[in-house]
Amino acid sequence: MAVIGIDLGTTNSLGAVWKEGEVCLIADGLGNRMVPSVVAIDEEGNILTGQAAREEELLHPERCASNFKRYMGTEKVYSLAGRKFTPEELSALILRRIRKDAEEYLGEEITEAVISVPAYFNNDQRYATKLAAELAGIYCERIINEPSAAALAARKADMEGEQLFLVFDFGGGTLDVSIVDCFEDIVEITAIAGDNHLGGTDFDQAIARAFCEENGVDWNCLEKSRQQALLFESRRCKEQLSARNEAMLEFCIGTDSYAMELTTNKIFQIGQRLFQRMKNVISRAVRDSGLGLEDITNVLLAGGSSRLPAVQMFLSRLFERDVMIGEEPDLLIARGLGVYTGIKERREEVKDLMMTDVCPFSLGTSTAGNAPGDPEKMCMMIERNSVLPCRAEMIFTTSGDYQDRILFKIYQGENYNPDANLKIGELGIPVVKAPKGKARVQVAFTYNINGILEVSAVDCYTKASVKTTVVSGYKQLSTQQIAAIKGQMEGMKYLPREQEERKAILAMGERLYAETVGDARRYVEQALGYYQHAWSTSSPIQIRKAGKRVMQMLLNVEVEQNYSVFEEFFDDSREE
Ligand code: ADP
Ligand code: MG
Figure: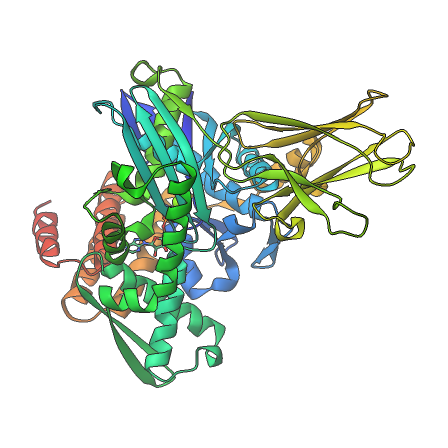
């Protein structure tokens, strides 16, 4: 029974394990390692995940859900084809899919996973992630911060001396920057900073809006589905820039068709504000670690958006030298998780590896102002970038006469004013009635290696104590409740693997056929024909083989890469 690592992303998810002395990324039946984090219900009521669901979303958004990671731990409910799902249930479907892929790929049962979460995830979101794992039939003892997982991938066994890395993880919706100090077998995270509302989708938005502005179209007057379609095209056009210098964004509105040329320079122009925000995050991480930009040995790229040439150019300019490392940035976190599973299983090659992590934000409580009537102010208990696990204690007293209770409001954030921080919970404790300033309560904050905060308070006179793991009540489901949801989920209809793969390929192929003309369209047509032929042979091996090849080819058509590879493709597929 193996432990797998899962990068449960907003846009894409991946699985990894430690196998035969190295990290092995899990591939599905079509050879894809990235699973789009999308869930759909098809016309027959079957659950679809990954690429098949992503295709469905373009045609029938009302039966699909994506981006649900953003709502983990909240009360948001999704309705898909009349059926209700919580973000945890949707995430569970993605985790389940990855578990199944891994079981097939490795030929063994998977019962445990290490799952990565954004560093800024609070207790609710972390519990929600654990719950999702449980619903997917996986035990998740360890939650690990995404930038920390990336840091593990940064370390190379043959590295010499001390290396200071800046990990730049730029995904679909978030940017995380971490500073990592690697020396021999120790990987030490010294600072983390992030912006959880800055990612690839902001570029898609900026491109779509620039397109409208340039063509005299009012974005706000577009129907929701047209906005969605334009964003999809903007995203694709943006992604093409990593393979070529310019890309053309073409889009029809009503009966008119419009176009805009996209280049790296243009990205700089329309994304100016976004680049400024990137710079702020980098500065904060570097400053918090007590370093200067010149001390950084290398910048490690992670996340799909760091493929954008404009982003890489921006980083080179900022560091004034060529510091980038990153071949497959979207896989980096999963690679780190693979290393972590190796450590967890105490595999020979990595068993001595040690990683220290930090708390990504400050945690504290509010206290009364200096004089009656003054606004409350923050009292920081654990400061950001403290090494985990950490604990802080402080004595508090009453601010009113004969007060019989003290209520501690618990916040996460860096602001002086408590209301500007995120309130994550509260803890009330009864105290002996006494004149103000006489009662004494000792409060302790404990932040563990999974990033889960526990707060306790003890009355110093009566020794009575209270304690809370800071989490909103409604997410604390009982074992029976969890079993009931799990039962419901097991009762849903899932397509057999090869049927789901077939749906993905046909939908994607038909979409690309409609979207392309000329050579590209001819290749798509041939590829679909080749795949359908494989099905008519009813040989599972032929079907699998054709599926893999056709999927890779369609992915290439999607980013409009050099078509000569397709000539070769058909040359040797004819030989078989
Ligand atoms: P997440 O961590 O949010 O799940 P990923 O790391 O997979 O996301 O990144 C997804 C984002 O990366 C999307 O916004 C996507 O448009 C962007 N992306 C993927 N490939 C490229 C590329 N070649 N060029 C630019 N952006 C890309
Ligand atoms: Mg990610």
